[in-house]
Image 1 (cartoon, rainbow, N blue to C red):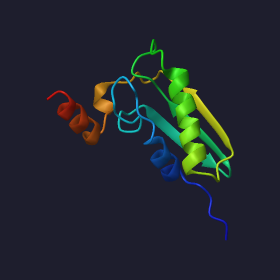
Image 2: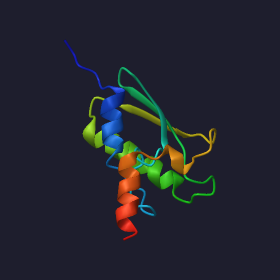
Image 3: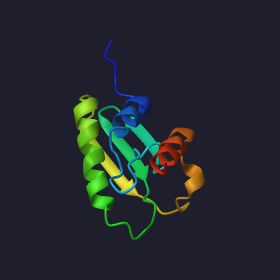
Length: 105
């Protein structure tokens, strides 16, 4: 029986992508809205902290590279940006809040 990649596998791979301006991974920041896996294709919908964020393409490229490295079963990766709902700090995980609190000390 062949085991295919799951949305959990993709989410864990994306935890390796750290927003360089904030220093927290994009999953814990709440930037990843949706992950769909069909066979060897992964579709990811994500956002940025602001529509004017200059790092959008950079973070998309890092995300695709992380998936290729950590989930080799995935061949096709489609990462799209969405702006609805707009990102809000309430979307961050408790782990992200803890990391940011420690960084302010």
